[in-house]
Length: 279
Image (tube, rainbow, N blue to C red):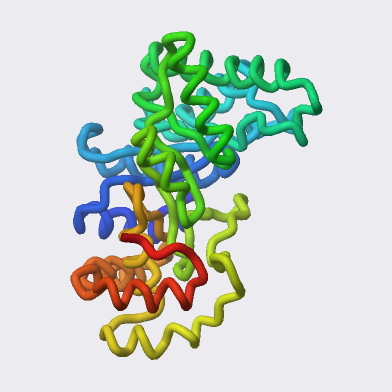
C-alpha cells in the first residue's frame, strides 16, 4: 500500500495546504477509502478541519437496493476503511426511482423512499454522519424525498451530488446545494468507480471549440470549465481529480478566472457548452 499512498499523500497535502478541505469518496471504491483513511491517519489533521463525503451506491452489493440493511452495512464499511467515527455528508443514490424502476404501484415507491429517509435520519441520530444528501435522483424524486422527510418529521437532505447543470428549483425552493464536477476537467472518479466526468452538456463538445475563449481569458480549457461550474446556480463545491500536486495547482488557478467571467463571457460559454448559463 506504500507505493500508491505516497503520491496520494502529496496531492492531499497540497490540497489541504491550499485551503481545499472537502474530500469525496464512495463505498463502491473501497481501495480509495482505505488509501484516504491511511493518509488522514498519518497526517493527524484535526477532524474539524476537513470534510469527508461518501456515497452509498446500491450498498456496494449485488443486491441493488437502498434498504436499511444495505445503507447501514455500506456506511459502516466505509467508516472502517476510512478509520473515522463519522463522515460529514453521506449521499445515497441512485434512490428508488420513478415508475419505470418500481412498476406502476406508486405506494411501493413511496414506501421505499420513506425507508431511505428513515435510515438516513437514523444514521445522523447515531452520529455516523452529520448530514445527508441525494445522489443520482431525478428532480421529482428529490422533491418527494424532501416532502417525505417533512411529513414524518425526519431529517431532510441538505444537498445533492449532481451532474451539471444542477436543477435550479432544488436550490431555489429547497435550498439544496449541489456537489458537482466540471464537464471539462477530470472528475471525482477513483479507479473502480466509473463516472460520467467529461460528459458534454446538452450537445457534443469539442475541447478545441473553447480554446479561443480560454486564450482570451489567459487560462486553460480545464480551468475555464471549473470556473464555469463554480458559477452555476446552487453549486456548493466542484470536485476535481488530480494525480499530482502540479495538476492540482493548475486546476486551482480556475479561481483566478472567476472575476473575468462577465455576463457576455458566460453567454458565449453557455452557447459553446450547450447548457444553461450560470448567473
